[in-house]
Length: 386
Image (cartoon, rainbow, N blue to C red; front, top):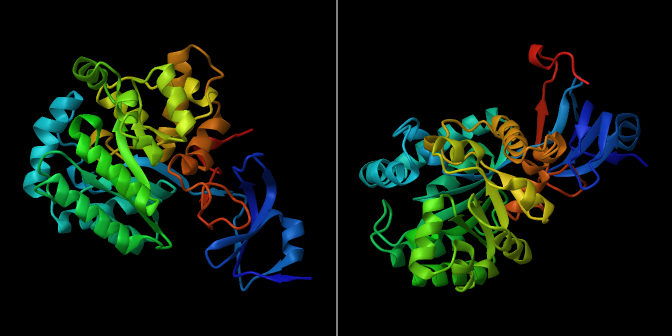
């Protein structure tokens, strides 16, 4: 019996990016509403489905939209500010003072709108954001039709949208109540980092995330200095420090994790923490190179992020995919580390799992959201291809 669909994508090289890495060289995808209804060989699906709109993909790659696992999208308006500086000088000496002076709801909405346009051009359909006035990030993102984890930042000192961490926590809860259940926006809470949080912040933010069953986004062990300071002050590295406050009982998205040891990796894997690898940002700020091959061996879900434009200077996820693969090979001395298939998974299916959206997006499977992109490989720099 022929089934009805709203859209039928035909004549595509379909990359499913599911657990079995299924692909169909002459494939098709049927879509109804915002969900995938069918995936498979074109000859089969054109017999099974009829749709009022048929899109001829003309041999292009049809694949899941990319997932940017860690970014600060309003910072598109700060592109190039404070280049060629180490992280502490860049963040505390340039970025945060400028943000306190100029960041407003209007700034955030405009910066997010600009970033969404750039993300769409890069094939991104989902991202995890951490910033101020995050309600405005959510508004602009939903208007652009993208999917996002929108995480309200909480700091131990005054920020552009809060004079105290109590005010930031209250704003987080208000935002969660407003956006929870939205088809595109997942609200979340974001204690910025261990070194910018108090014990009260970590405990309260974790409790809030658990209360509403939303993600918790936090920077972890981005620099060696962060780890050294934690060891000096608390006699333990960052992951065990956070563990004692039950932070990992929430659905954690851990940005960077450049300087974690193997025991910390095991802890993160055991708690189901998603890791967001930010290769360009870590190189630009000389933070180091994360041990991604080992994390993958241990079973961690590792996504790829652009970080904010100020520490990148763009939101090009294909660039990040390539760099993630090359860095893993060059730093490990193993040319087989992070092969192409794994790198693409880190920006799609595994990336979605890393930000706790794996049940919704990241792969082309029946029932998942129809977050699709077409990639033209009939270009000069892709010719010939095998």
